[in-house]
Length: 247
Image (cartoon, rainbow, N blue to C red; front, side):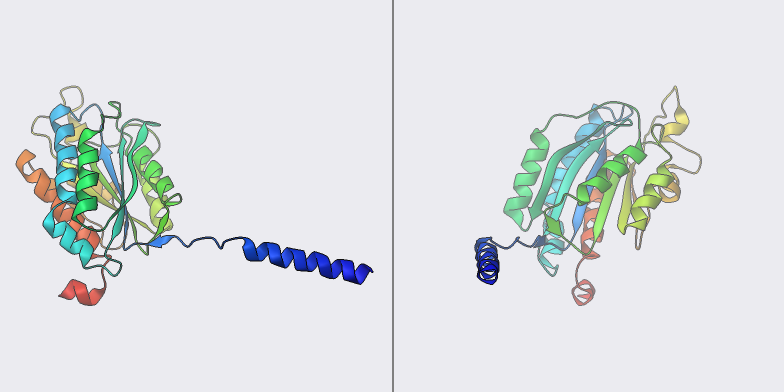
């Protein structure tokens, strides 16, 4: 009797397992890319508009879309967030697959419509930490994970930025930088936007890292959009098969 009862329990368990649908595998993409944009106090309305419009134009640029199409999976996933002071970070557009002009244009249109998140101090470390947290909740998988930090000043809030950078690098996340150069230094803290050796050097020494990481300068408002396009192409191209990169 006990043996029959045990067999019945096992049979019920097996039938129950059979009707439970298997967990769906995360969708593969060629790159998980967090665009982390500085909206601190030193980023005035002109710079804020420049970043938003620059990223919107870049994501739908034909050369960027060609780079995406050349990948093994022909798609990447992008998340756009804004950061300023310590604890002030916000996801503006959550993880979105970009696999062609339609998806890219929808992302760009949404980006241009969203309001500004903050205007506080400059915690690059807080921005990196918040960006790192987004990868664990991404509904996609990729061999490469990259944070793209754009900003116009040095870290002046939160923990040491090199600690945040080094922790991200240890778990395999690359960090690239796009620095927005300021024509006029801030009168109350000129070294914030113009540190010794230049902002690009500061980013190379303290912010960016990982295999093939780089910093691109936007020397003036006119060059910002092209700088973003070049940066995104370089990031996406690293995620494509080597034979296609050579072509």
